[in-house]
Image 1: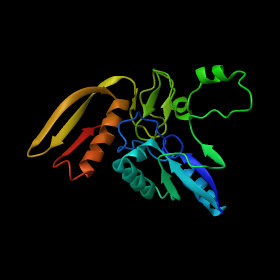
Image 2 (image 1 turned 30 degrees about the vertical axis):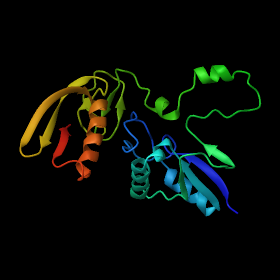
Image 3 (image 1 turned 120 degrees about the vertical axis):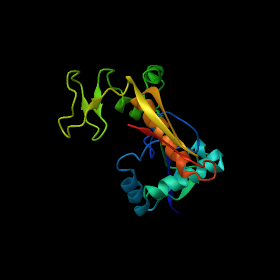
Image 4 (image 1 turned 45 degrees about the vertical axis):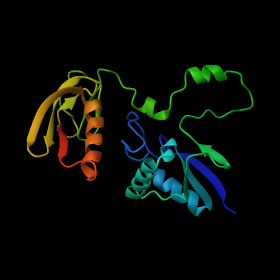
Length: 204
């Protein structure tokens, strides 16, 4: 009988660096190396179960199935509840070591890995093409690819264009981070032909 390993979906398989939107919208890509890791687990005769509150709705479960298939990640089971397992892999867990000494302090200071990864200064600029981060405020262009740098936390005007019976455009003030999230939602709507009859996108 295969032993079970349980992985949380958001934060372990899905990067989850963007904010939560809804069970049916997965905003980010897979965590680097997760597909290879799961393949190795299964090759070593472990049963891989993915758990998520997204699976409480059929929409959430179906979207996760599609996302896993698109990213070539193959698992054995999807579950809304944690089944018995030899180990649970979760981005928001603190491993209990047999004593409660210091545990409250660990809870107060706890941060999931993706929050630490994106914890950059308000003055940090990024390249929207290659992802290069620059701490020098005076630099305006990426040294790697020459693309103009932007501060993802500063508000700018982004043109949102709607196609329905006719074309309509409007400039909206938001940060680059906010524009990225909105654009992912619009991309999802554009693909869903049952609920959307036009097209909408943001010019970056």
